[in-house]
Image 1 (cartoon, chains in turn brown, purple, blue, yellow):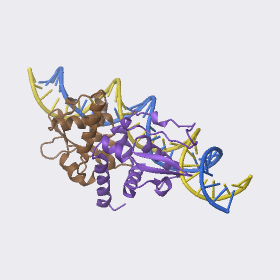
Image 2 (cartoon, each protein chain N blue to C red):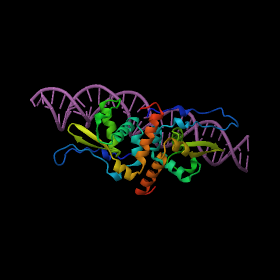
Image 3 (spheres, chains in turn yellow, red, brown, blue):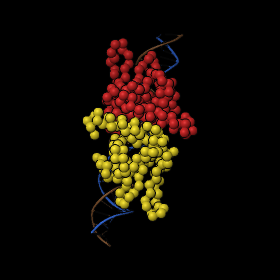
Image 4 (tube, chains in turn orange, brown, red, green):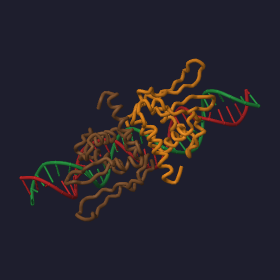
Length: 128
Length: 128
DNA sequence: GGCAAAGTACGATGGGTCTCGTACCATAAG
DNA sequence: CTTATGGTACGAGACCCATCGTACTTTGCC
């Protein structure tokens, strides 16, 4: 992979109100290898499927994964740093949204094809 | 990944003529996670791009990668075991072909979307 | 202020995986 | 048979990554 790593920077001093900000790669910085790598993990693929099904922002805790809280944090960070989801704080919660526009512009049809593939495989095998 | 590993079995005692055979996953055994993982490596993505561009079977050595011979063997094995390419021996050479039919049947549009994404990114950045 | 909720940071651990070199095997050609 | 070609097997090294637990921070509410 030999990936970017630039996205790991934390923004400490916030602008306006002092809200915590999270670093996201710009659209042009999104790499197909990083996207495919992020989605090759079953947990993260599951997250993205649920996010796509919800068609709305969800908090981290709304998406239940069979792993610990810190592992969940890890997976969401990978998704954000690869450019697949955008995250914003809202109170104590963190909202997660698919970056559909960016992904569809950059890689037309990719996200839909992967989601369709994942859904098809899920019901071909014994369900979710 | 916690992947299959069943595909690693070597066929030693050959049938008919004694030709060396290679184990391939059946169509139904191909997993989207394994496919995405295989294609998330730059070398392997490059191999698949060239294979798609050739639209014909190629030997391993026709696809030049900036890695050693044994590493090349490794990458082709990952591609075969994930169900992306089929490999057959022909003389001393090994022919590689994209499993387009299987992939398109299982995951419609996926391969084309990934190839288009990779090609788009390649000329968006400083070429290949 | 005090407390609960939602995440984060950090370090550890166990297991992949990308890379290599060297030795080896199978096939084809001389 | 000998040699060259094309690829494999094996082991090693370095790094990456999914997972966890514990301690901590931030925010909202009472």
